[in-house]
Image (tube, rainbow, N blue to C red; front, side):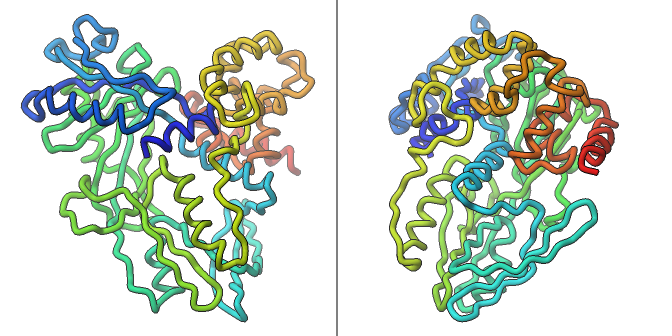
Length: 440
């Protein structure tokens, strides 16, 4: 995972950025020498080219100490990367479509049947209350359904030994900014868990995550009152600015499907992944576990398993393929694209002087070099079309609907962007009405 991190930074340099993380030291949990030793290994196992090494800091004299309570004196600072997971998913889908894949958003698989060395899939797509049934044939199927993977394995590969998944809910809260610098924090708690606090969308701080065993309905996942209280209490241990549930402006929760390795404590369960192949007839590959940092490697290994069964062998290539918008300086994954973001921003500022700087930076972080497709030949803010919502122009909406499969306000305000955080509660209804009016 540590080596893969820099691979991802090179293939999506606009989307995945370096971040410095500060860990205030709690001597009652771990001695400083132990943390230093762990960070030494972290630095040297990673084969770093893009990220600076770790260091010990004194909080009273370091910029990262501002915002923390005065009793926190010592800390360690290390480097990691940050990505908006929703946009990473979208860019992979856009890339796949440009390579010839058919992308079917809002489509569920109702049934699968093996017939004559083929899979016959009954799909159902739905949008705006209208459902459409599709029949698709495939030579192979990959079950990468996450929390539903074990259920689908049981349905379609009953001869395979059943896999046990532990479903662990992780929840986040967003509050008004708790500190003014751009570093993030990693906080240790007395229960052994860690929680992160990151600068988020300019005016906010993102706090998470929790680790809670989950046994509810997967279609109804949300943060609990106890999780909100837990995250607020931990923040209040470290930050001068105190928060409560009333300060939470947004929250989200997801369920991690972890392979049950017998560990009692949810936080201790492995985040590794494993494959289970059923090739009695047309093959189906079941995938269990995994995490975002290793998604590309997981997909590469899945193809390594399937390709011999399908009569081909193309070899690994995705570590040398930029995700859409990643060609900031050169057209191959290279450190220049990562290190040249500021230079690229300056160049675009000169090319599009009519764009407010904050809007341009948002475009560049979301779309990278695809900003040129979004703006096209427009040479004024008025030419970007109607400002449907504050800082959301018709040109961007059109780009997202045409090129990134967006169909609704929720897609645009929360999945393709996070503009929903900055807009009033009625913004989604206004945007949905506008999109519907354009398509009518």
